[in-house]
Image (cartoon, rainbow, N blue to C red; front, top):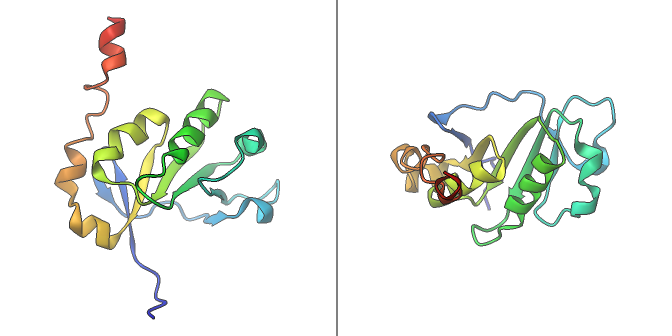
Length: 141
């Protein structure tokens, strides 16, 4: 078994980019109040505990499977609670879910190099105009 860490790719509205968060991420139980690292949350995080993370500079929410949508709910809840920091989806998020991730409140998506190869940048960029195809906005107009 190969234990070498898989390189990651950060997906933003402008396409693929390199990692630019240098403070790291820590599990919630290891995150001290004065720590400058971000928080790593699993998709199974208890929504009733999210309030304690509102001052974190960054939160990364894991997606163990592209079929597990709990991370979208956590992101939306954090934003509705007033979270203004950096919010990142990590793991099994596919290009077709990028618009949903952005609407839920994520700023970016972290994927591994294998997924980036299977779903190249052009597939993600095709969904980067996520505000244009929002049916809720169209209904409100």
